[in-house]
Image (cartoon, rainbow, N blue to C red; front, side, top):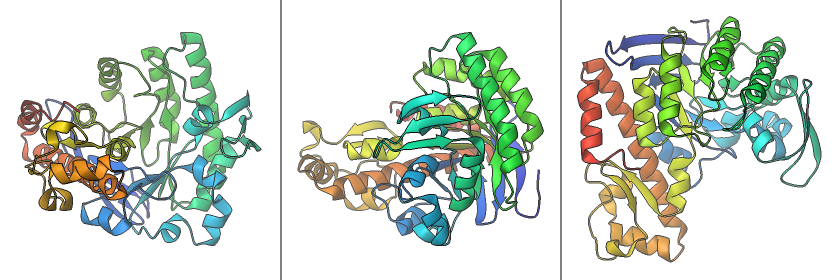
Length: 374
């Protein structure tokens, strides 16, 4: 699919697994897929400077509609020239619709077909999010890729509850597209349906008429066992459109990036990399390293022998352990940099293996080294 602002080139699909390599062209640059997108919830990736994100290979980052609407306000961001100028990030940006946060962070008052009335988690003020409001906020923020407003149902919902949420998501999608007016922003529908295959298929069917530039899979990695997530991705793989990027929302552990890519997913995001870094944990090619542990007190080796990032080239586990245990912010910053750099390296390797025809060997080596133990 393409227009003057967006196009997607599917360069190669692995015939055995369905893993894909492509290029998504956007107004702020090209994105090589499969890709991991660091999350900058509040218009910043925690502990990271934009120049450092660029240096380690970040192609696109994600920001959050709900949080930016609350603080500093989408109108202020618009006045500043949009999110790219406001945060000094000149590559692509994706914003979510705010739906997940409205349902998970706020004190809900009422969910109706009109939208969601809720109380702010910041000051208790009353607000109404509708599909039209979600589009208005995202237009003001000015991200390259924006998301339809959806109702994300919880793991454990009954079929009836999940069907109601899926139906509402489909109806809200129609309203989102009617309200979406900026051709320089690509609007992705979101496939919902909880853990029920029939509802996932119905959600996809109702989303397809609105798939212009990409499609997202929501409502996974919300507490269900990983094998169940993989089963649903397997179910959807052959049914999803091939000519647009496929985005699996909120997924970012190394094993899930691998398994998602093997099931035809092109784009991923997750806060995991920076969140665990702030707790003293590194994601490495050998598995998880909890540097605050005592066994690293005199370990003067790098976090990951296969990593070329600034942290691994210059600092030892012993030093990082010291920083974490005395509460120095530099420790969290260095671990955040490494974790994001590692995930980018993992995705680059996946892309190269797809293009080179050896993706199964790449995945086998990943698991043999212990990279899945994160």
